[in-house]
Length: 296
Image (cartoon, rainbow, N blue to C red; front, side, top):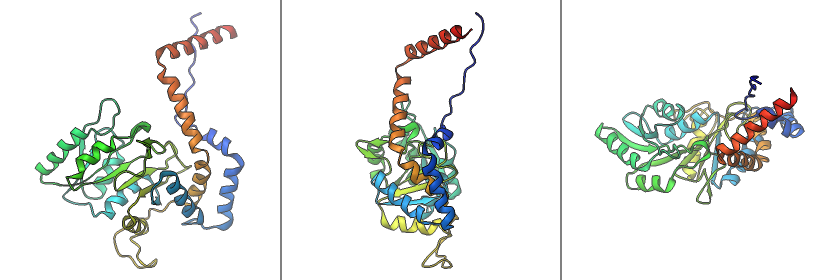
């Protein structure tokens, strides 16, 4: 009777289950890339960008090599650098502040709301004042839509409207969610996301994307993505990166986008089950114990 039950770990993201579900369609998508051999900037990259724009409602999508590069590319395109401050939530993955530092600017961390862990608009006001007191130029704010929960974009927009800052939303952990009936990806100047496998919408490697309605910014981002490219491959008009999304990953994401809405619904069902509280968990535990005893 003192026998302990051995708990089985639950994968945070079950990539193997996604692989089994996609099956043949994924094999065929990868095979098409292997057949046409356009491994860099192949047709799947352009197709994915168009489909992500339709999904999010953004006018332009610029795919890239990672979520960190997505943040960095926007900061570079906006000439954010030394002496500038970028406001970031204090509860976030290191890449949020890391991208700011890589651009040569200073991340200024502000508090988050206790209920959502997203950036607190009142603290954002204080952070802007602190940055100025330190002799920095506040240029941007990076809200993070964490755990599938949107930041309060209305409150954030109201703060930055009179301050001359732009909003670079980080939706890596919230892609697919909505705020007041609009998909994330359409708030602020630009939105950055990551396609790392553990994200809500992930590929089978590294990848990212930037969403924006600003045509000029989109054009600059495409230049930054490829060594600051100008009119042709060897015309380099600005400092840039090697930050292209791999064609193979684009092909995989096209297939995964087809089932993404269904995955969101499934995650919500699981979340609702957890949200029912301790009574549900206790019932589940009692059921496991009863099953174990019957097997003895």
